[in-house]
Image (cartoon, rainbow, N blue to C red):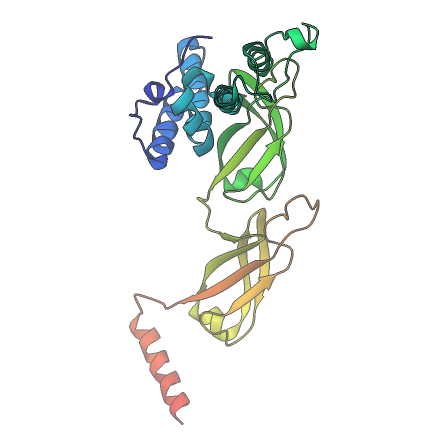
Length: 297
């Protein structure tokens, strides 16, 4: 496989910070996203390369391996074992308990998938495939209900189900959808971190939602009915007479769905913000003055 310079793909130097990598990935992913470049094979290829580069460089452990071993970074641990064994063999070569060149050769070949004269010439060492890491950016409304989505990971389309109630920063594992195992070894896993963007009028805290609604002075004083928005529609609230500014009411079960708990929801907390009337007429001023006099008695 030809060497791929992941830093070059993201347009970054080797000294780039984690934040630099994240910014460059998001910028390029948006630029080459298939939805913005329909029927553009070059853009699709670039999009896949950008995702692959991010999967490696955004993971500190994998990045360290890549920086040291380049195209062989996926087998860094095996290289280290081989190096340590080589040092051991050299230190004790010729001693009663040492390794011969033939022994070390067999060990090295078995580590990297070669044939071993000591194991019948046919067995190969099996290695687990690398784990992939990806970031999925969604709107808050996208995780209000369970839905399916197709992701492109390392040139492969993967159809996944996103549970309702996923939180910002949450990571889920898709078993067996990472890198392919070596010599029949098991595949790695895919780890997806969710970045939830909230453009709604609601503030989310785990399963609960919070919002503020305007309440006119007269309804606050006299009481009445008020239509308020919830995340999935409007509901009618009964406002008690003499409701104070900042009063908070709880709408049970009108919050956000609980993760992997079908049919269970948090609560919605509504805070009343009393709005004073403006552009008061002379007649209204007279009536307010009359009310002021009555309250003073």
